[in-house]
Length: 162
Image (cartoon, rainbow, N blue to C red; front, side, top):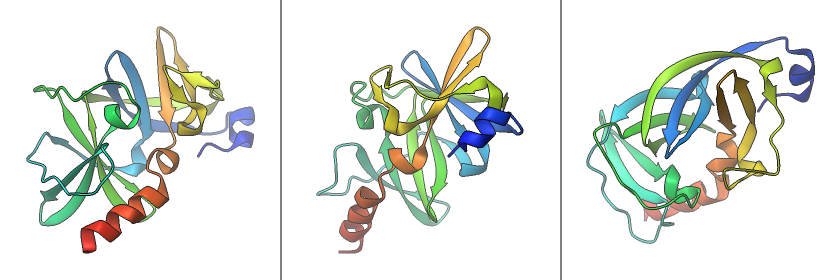
């Protein structure tokens, strides 16, 4: 989470992985990203929320996979050759995020990040850390702790261990 004082002072630049969902660009801090994978076989797990697509075996580690478009109510899945799974670490848990494309890393001065408006592209402000103005581009910075609700992930772990 971007500290308000950092926003005001603009003291730190941060690196972000940029990915696309439909026509919008989003960013997550690079230090939260473990890898970016091509779409893989996902095994459905019963009794999970619709946005949890299942689990995948990633180099011997079973990793839950979430479809961000479904999570944000942005439509149904439509996987293409550019679809990627971004593996992120949140609260000591690795989770895969299905996105339409991921192929950019940008440095952003914290002074270029503004607090999120109430709603951006249909997303509630609770999911956002801010919006970065990169000249011709607007980058929506996600708050992964909020996007990957801890209670929902714990429920997923309980189902997975049954």
